[in-house]
Figure (tube, rainbow, N blue to C red):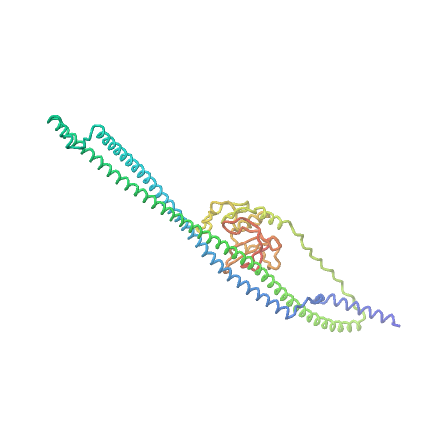
Length: 452
């Protein structure tokens, strides 16, 4: 059986070892269990998937670029066809005017021809009356008989003068009738030619308009088809960009796991080295304690008070609600402040062409100003400054209320608020309104900005 002395000695050594462990500086807490360690094959497969998606995004971007270029050509062709249709319409109106004038002239010519025909009928009636008079009064046109039947020289003279007068009148009537018939024929011919020319020009203009309208319809249909194709490609590209984003996050996660595992190995090695050092030190101190048999225990340490994270406030939801309250408000470049939508400003270019300076609304950074003004955050009216305003978090950790940014050539040009579930609220561009959209991953900056 162990003696009382041995029990006391063992208890003292145990107490000494615990005190040494508690009081030795630099002693780390025990390393937790190892984190997952992705295999090299997993990492290779993930990188291959990233490369594949990146290649597909590039291919779709090129295809979209070609489709948009073709769409621009078709839209230009539509404009050309519209101008041709407008020209045909103008020509048609001009031809209609010519036809109307020709018809008016034809009506005038017809009236003159009718008047000439009436004059002819009047002359013919006079001639018929003259002939009837000769039968009633005898054959006055028989000059010899008229002279021989005269009773005296004075009657001969009177009958000769009368015959000369009758012959002259008859000749005059016949000449007038001849000229009237010729004039009528000429006017009839001119009227017909004028009508024929007017009708030909009108038919020609109408045919040109039909051709132009048909060409315009074909061009518009081609443009609509191409636009639908471009939209389809864009939707596919957005989907693949999201897949690329997810693949990159996956690889990044695997690499993070690998790094954490390697850090764990290093910590485990340090722990083992520290354990060996402690054991050697404990053995040395235990030997000294056994020699003295009377070493007081060290004072126990007070456990550190845990830090309690503050409960999240309502700020994020307030900002989100303020942004969503402006859905449907028109886009106005330079518009928006902490109180709401304001009149846009001139930019000397695209915004002016849309009349933004006459509209009351938001641009992208103006919407963010209004959203966060509700919780007392005053943002500058420039997305590039807003990117540097808050705390940046990786996109893999983005949460509702964070701001997302897009850049071209390293220059930030757009900002939106993330809503969660792959959606965001934004004021997109001139000619649009505040809306909810799926997150676009092309050109997205690698960090979200968290203000709350």
